[in-house]
Image 1: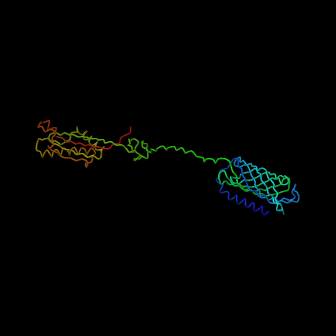
Image 2: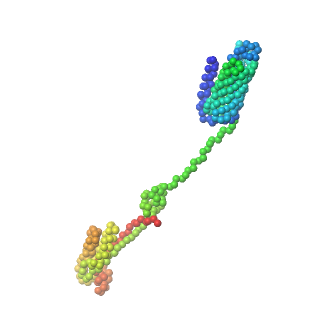
Length: 348
């Protein structure tokens, strides 16, 4: 009994060390062959067919071969043949014998398996037995593995209960499967994002959130153009007069509207006189004429700070002729305002 217990412990210890080596192996389906050494503990008394009949047989150190086929992850069927070399009790001689039969293996995983089988023993006389056991098989190469088993044998037509150990090497036919190569993932290019819908993707857009109505450049910024605007005023006066005739009110209002539209503008009103009379007097009169027009602009809503006047007298005559028509042409107040601004270009 001590030998049986020790042998079982050895098998379990070897099996536990084999787990690490085998836990990453793939199942080896298909045909295999193997050879092994066999320890068999018989302890047979009163053997049928023995001569003399009182012969007692004990332990056997033998060898054998097996061939098997693994059908799937769980089941293997195999045949084995073992040559026995049984000790005779109280004798230096040995008795040779044979054990052969088949097994069904159930694999718990890629390393450990259970065994159920039927055997025939040929020692002096034939007898049959059933066996139940446990084993392990560990692959140190894809096709090569070492294995170990422990089996309990129960005689069917003779009263024998025996124990056996096997340790061997097996070769598994078949080619190592090629590693599965996963197809490269299909990368769907991400649609470039244009958050402000101006036609320029965000990665190149230097001006976020441009108005939808504006045309943009290659960097997503509003495109501008220079736009000019201007207004002119001409107010005529009678000889030696400075009152503003009502017929010029619309023109003055037009200047006022222009200055409201462009609040950054200022106006310079230039008063002028004809060459008739004293030059000093004419200068004062021209300034008075400019001030009268300025007063009307202020009444139309333009701040006085934006209006400047100057009296030019007879220094800048439009018409230097000494005629009645020329003198009327020179009695005037005139102004010119122009602006240039950057205007956003609109989309088509």
